[in-house]
Each structure stands twice: as C-alpha cells, then as structure tokens.
Length: 320
Ligand SMILES: NC(=O)c1ccc[n+]([C@@H]2O[C@H](COP(=O)([O-])OP(=O)(O)OC[C@H]3O[C@@H](n4cnc5c(N)ncnc54)[C@H](O)[C@@H]3O)[C@@H](O)[C@H]2O)c1
View (cartoon, rainbow, N blue to C red):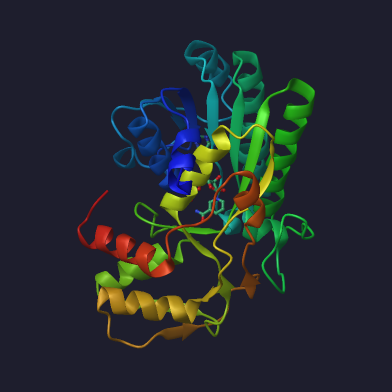
C-alpha cells in the first residue's frame, strides 16, 4: 500500500473527539479534518484568541475556560475517546509580562483537562508543544535528545504540559503524545498575533502596507504547513506508544528569503524595511523530525512554495 494510504488507514474515523482550542488557527483545521472523517467533535475554547467564524458549525461548541471546574461535567457527559489539546496562552511576550496568567492557562488548565480526561475514561491525549521554545538556540536541526533550554515562561509552561502528560500516562494509564511544533503557517492564522510572520507579511503586502523585518533578516526558522500539522495530530491520536516528537520540515529559511517568496506571490514590488532586532529572538531554530517519520510515519509533504501559495491564495480570496 502507498505511504499516503497507510497514513489514511491509521487515522481515526467515526470516533468521539474533544478538541480544546478548536476555534483557533491550528485547532479549527484539526476540527475540519475530524468532521471530514465522520468523527463527532466537541470543542472547548474561551475565544480569547480564537474566533467562531473559524469553526465548522457541525462542531459541538462550548465557550469555556480550560481551568473551569465545569469541564469535568462536560467530559463526563460527552465521554470523548480521543482528545486534542491545543488551547493555550500562546504569546511569548505576554508570558514574560504576566507569567502567572500564562501558568494558570497552560499549567493549571492542562492539569484540569487531564484530570477530567481520566475521570471520563478518555484513551489518548495529543498535546501541541513547542519546538522552538523548548530547545532555544541550536547550531543544527534539534532532535528530541537536544538539551531543553526554555528561555521564556511560555517555553517553561509548554514543557511542563509535556511532563504532566507523561505523569498522567504512568500514573493513570492515560495515553499521551506531545508534538513539538515548528513555526506553523497557513489559512486562518491571526495576522494580529506576534509570531505568525507569514500571516503578518501576507496581510500587509496584500493591503499595500510595508512589512518590517526585525534585525538583519538572517534569523532562520522552520516553517511547516498547517495541513501537515493536522496530519501529524491525527496520526498521533492512534499512536500507541506515547512520547514527544518534533514536527517540522528540517529545512531552515531566513526571514529575508521568506519575504522575497511572499513578495513574489503577493506581487509586492517594494524592498524590505528593516527595524531594530527583537530582544530574545533566536538566530536559528530548525527541527529534525526523523523520529516522527520512524514512529508516527509522518513527514512534512507540503513544500514552502506550495504552502505559501495556498496561504496567499486563500487570503487573497478572503477565505475563512
Ligand atoms: N502556531 C504555531 O506556530 C505553534 C507553534 C508551536 C506550538 N503551538 C501550539 O499549538 C497550539 C495552537 O496554537 P495556534 O497557533 O492555533 O494558536 P491560537 O491562539 O490560534 O489557538 C489557541 C486557541 O486556544 C483558545 N484558548 C486560549 N486559552 C484558553 C483557555 N484558557 N481556555 C480555553 N481556550 C483557550 C484560544 O481562544 C484559541 O482559539 C497552542 O497550544 C500553541 O502553543 C503553535
């Protein structure tokens, strides 16, 4: 059987799934794919950064904070078999200014969810962790064995989520897989966010504004397309072994190169403007995903040119 068909065969179909953060950028794409696979999908999201317009109307939506004690009642009632946990405080700069609020959402919220999962008899949780903030600055693509060196409260709380997942696996038998994502891009990414450089540049170029590159533009990032991330999430939902996996392309792209590709696709003919470097920005962050290839059967299949074309076309057509 071709690899693509093998992947399709192991992804869940017709199951009961809870998606936290399902009204957000990545979460809404995960919901679409699960619904497409005839799963019944419950979504918990407090709409702090997510939008109802992202969310398919077929999803059973609950506007609720992750840390809300009522989450237990909801899970006892819906009894999801599988859980995708994406809801999080995702702003690094907010985590620096308000580490307590970051910890309440990302640590206490995650513990509340995992307790509710155990109580409701869920089988498997997939947690979206962060590769860039887990490994910090590296010289070459980071593997899962690279030293963990989070530099922000956000990096610390996302790693804590991974360790809580492992604890609940050994202590309560709750299956858990953490996916350490690279820089995800695609349709529905909020251009008002701080990290979605593809969304920010694309929107500015298409509306005649002038994007600013912080520093010299030679910072290297690993840009992975949202459709590939959705595939990794679905493969992880049925992976029996647990563990943490890097989800990236293994290829580094400078911000200058990204600007030039986007400028061509958006037909933006002005040169880049440069501003002062942002304190704390890593020079190099790329993920080696060979472990995910061996154990999950996953690798990124959308090249940067194709993924950016899909993203720009969707924004140009005003697709939600
Ligand atoms: N986008 C990336 O490049 C990237 C990279 C690494 C990891 N991640 C992780 O992937 C996940 C999804 O990220 P995204 O880019 O889709 O962000 P997003 O902000 O679009 O999605 C997060 C969603 O969670 C919801 N939410 C936030 N706090 C909540 C709370 N306390 N209770 C209930 N809902 C809450 C928001 O309203 C939003 O819909 C996050 O966990 C993030 O840490 C993303």
